[in-house]
Length: 616
Image (tube, rainbow, N blue to C red):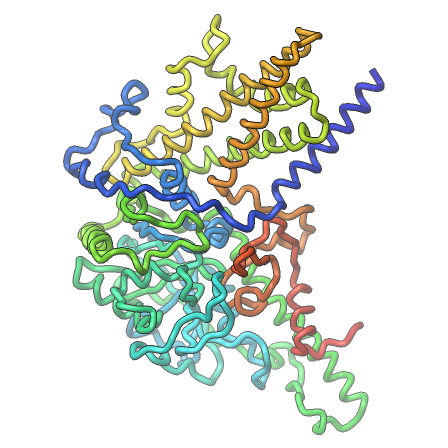
């Protein structure tokens, strides 16, 4: 018995090791799947004839869902699952869909400016969290210092930008449109708080890192909405003007939502549905601390003692400034798993997926160059979306469905993958069988009706419907596309569960057939290797954010850092922190994430020579 405990402990330790190995192993290149063009999907479904809830049931759903391959289905699944979730969106930086959104009455939006706190008289950028706008307002220390420059959320820095997008290209090109934004001002910063007084029910949520200020795909949805003719002509301020103008002519538009660090909302009209409830003039930092002004020129210091006191005071303020940047990252972390203030109307989703080729790699896919016909289809559908208010309350919130699927089956798949990795080390069929049945037994048993021992076709059908069924009647072709996509993904998951359990059960026959024939053993080994390949392929195809995490638990005062794209407190695109390069030199976020604190930002500024903080 003691020996068994030792062996069990060894295998448990190996399991933990291999499990985290999958979670942290880098996938530098996602397989180049071909997305099948199925534009007929949208022609097959007449909008007025869509199914009602009472018409689509467990008994007939498989007859009504539409044809879609796994790669397309996964792309639709992930567009839904990633929406309004910072972690997911940064891990899938190029979004390709337009999701109608809704901000309820009472929502607060923040905007920083140096023009005396005047309400913008045209479109402008607002933040969902004050830390975002606060950090853009600058840290007024009496004299400009090196560090993060920039105006309010939206980062309107003129035509030239620093850094690179995921593809390693310099963001934006020169063009005739846009030009520099209105002056940000040079006085004290004002932090304005607006409250939504009427629902913002004509918004679009644009997925991925849609405020990355790049030309590598993250902003393609804005390119489509603005109807730009080339990226040489594209400027995000010009694009905002075009989008608001287009929306006004087509039923009205409140704005659109993007991701930088936390979510920002481009508001087209500040007077229609918002009310200014607070206008705070931010004080000079040293004055608030009752410190004398910082002295940046040592020649003005009269003695070594005065120099030392000045350095100590400055070092304290350096810490405050680092904390300001860290608190902005924290505000983003709070919405890693979703910003519940942003409500989404998936019944009106508009997407090019499943109607033209889209690269499945979320770092490489582009839609700015899709055909004129498909662009025209998208714009026509977007016009239709604006003809009525978005209503997230009267249709299924499909993200609830996708979340349930990911949280249920993601850990099982990771554990199955680990079990096969262990098998490669110990080569014991019985142990592999015991491991993979441990993770699948209860799911399998839940659907097997006694006295049967195998899962019937009807039971399989129930196992799929159990996880994908809508909560409200289907309203649109978008609902049916999503349901069809979820059904395809869930079908693959259920089949993986069934095959894993039934193979595991066969493998454990070594405990009932002591002298198993060599031919039988060889056949089982071959099946095991085949299933291992299938599980790994399914994990790579799904590419769920669940598999990106920190190796250790972060301490209080730390956060598990998921890198962001575009401007940030750590520099453009967070410099190199948390990234790695694939074989093509493209930056990707590493699965092996790390904990950071405000000291990470402080040390980064010291490394750049931006801090006078003494070591005390």
